[in-house]
Amino acid sequence: MTQGVHHSRILNHELTCRLARSNDFDDILTLSQGIYNGHDYVPVRFHTWMKMENSAVMLSYAGKKPAGLLVCSVVDEGRSFVSRAARVSPEFRGQGVHKMQGKTMDEFVQKKFPNVRRKLLTKYDENFPLGRKLVQLDNLNCYVEKATRSSHQIPVVKRSVEVISCPKEYLYNVIFSRSTAQKLFPDNAIILDWLPIEPLGSNIDYLMQEHDMYFAVEKCTDGTQSPNSVSFGVLSHRISKLVHWCAAVYSTEKELYEAQLVHQFKRACEVVNDDFIFSCSQDKQFTNCGRRVLKEQLQMTLDESETVNLYELNFP
Image (cartoon, rainbow, N blue to C red; front, side):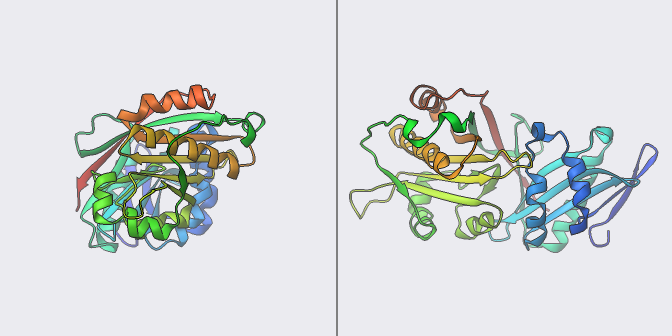
């Protein structure tokens, strides 16, 4: 393989895998057609990924036709790489495209990032025999209409807990300190908009190249205490122009989880001046509570919940 190029054959076509170039955008659009019912994020992030040192986009071609793509993100201070945004054209599915581009990407990562020791994937699949399951979270999703979600229309719920905005310096120095991180992230993993990372400031810096982000903690009355909850909000743009606000709540208590969920919802309504999709991921123990808050307190109609599984594979 030279410069991430690999050749094989599928049916009557020569299959070529290579690193993407900035002028491949039309092929990215072709491969994005129909993904997530027109809500794909790959075209929106493509040019950003091309500028990021720890990202790579692999494209596959059957002859001259775009057949698939795969993205890798190297995180955790160079120890992990995340295989993400896999796409295969409907015309070439079931013909080994995904397997070959995955193999090509693995070879590229091994040469370009020799310190990587594990590969991470987030999947809907409950069982993935090739990997070890590290984390399982539930996603709650709802469509929020501009006409029905002006901030004055959001029910005011009196709570004993106050949630406040959190600067990233506080996140790095306090929330990601060893004692607090072990309490809030017992699996040493955070999943933000499907990207799994360890609680490290460098990982948030990486993500902030892709997204606008928002952080919140509960206000501690005792200055010597560390928070027992934190939430993340990711403003995720899509090709459809219908943005997604992807929240993730990590909490030790149900009351704190509820307060964080409402806070993220209100923040999304303040930031997004249009219809949008709100989603929140949380530990399964809080899922029913989240459903109740969104349906009864915030008067939202929920889509079916999704379960996100994080798998780890040894690498290389």
